[in-house]
Length: 478
Image 1 (cartoon, one colour):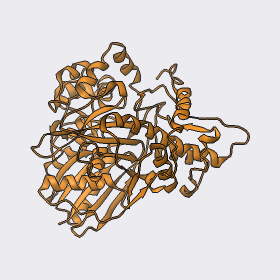
Image 2: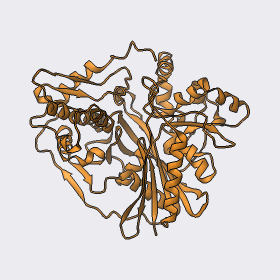
Image 3: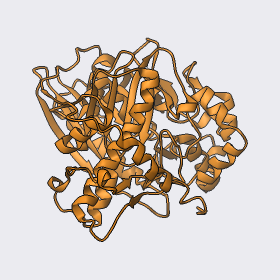
Image 4: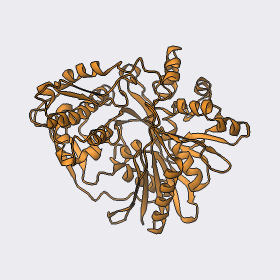
């Protein structure tokens, strides 16, 4: 019995069909435009996203999918008319930094203690709450619809689900990315709502991650049976379902998650987040710790856009690495996330000289992404313990040179599945749970990279480059 997954990500939407015999079919791929209307701003066209999600659902149904799971971007926000479903403003993407002044004002008032205690999250424009507040303050139609009890402002999945199944809902994992969810109760928190000035009635209902959301509109034989944040979907897909299991996805950003069981574990002093991993039907909330790096393949794509390379085969970590020769790249193009949570940081190359060539600069980019992520993994060890193996997926996981270097700077074995789309596989497995079906089998092999030498000492030198990157934007006014 076929199971489909729709992965609605930062740069595109993909649909996959998982067959009973282990075969996987790519059903559809759509790319959407990235809009950057000002410094620090990142937007998508909600109508374009919806067209792609709908098309993915239609092709999944036509391919015979009994159930489908939807993976979403997480913190991205869409505002729309709850009566008509019409979006009233561009989607504000998780990378967007426009709310930094508002967030800094809350931090100056000491509000971060509350967000860490209740939501498990620091104050940062990354999370949805300040974006929702921005819509209320700056989109005139939002205020009009609010007075008419027609306003919906939530994470992007709620917009899609309204159109796909006719319900204004989200799931526990996505709600935990807003800074508005009480991690203990799994419900919207009144004190956090007051802090951000957000009326409860504009937010979606929270449902389990794996559950029957309803049949797709115009496709009554296909049940939407899971809704989940993309990173939590990858965690589930990697079978990281017991405390201590850890995965890293190298997508637009790099995201490290580790399962922690049924107790949330926010650790403010380590800069690590607590988040909901998932809720399976009527079962308890399960939790994870989370640490993100804002720029991974987005940094690679930026460098490609500059014309520093043409083919991805040119991306190789040199021997010796660039950092051992004094050249470093800090991938802080959108600031620094875990453990710094510093939006004043800026991307940089440092150590350049007249003898620095293009190959060295490209190596430094790969090294910088690996080292930033290794910083997060090092922090996780304080909570999740020493991982037996790091499960890795995403675009950069296809680069053998990068994976070998990542193994050396973490000191751990790195396991990469032959089928790299773990977000889609995890969404499909969750949909199987929500629809009462067996999970699709894993029919692919894994490649394991073992550290050939110990390069963990490079983290200390890289920290000096990080220090130079921090504070560069502190005088900017947005």
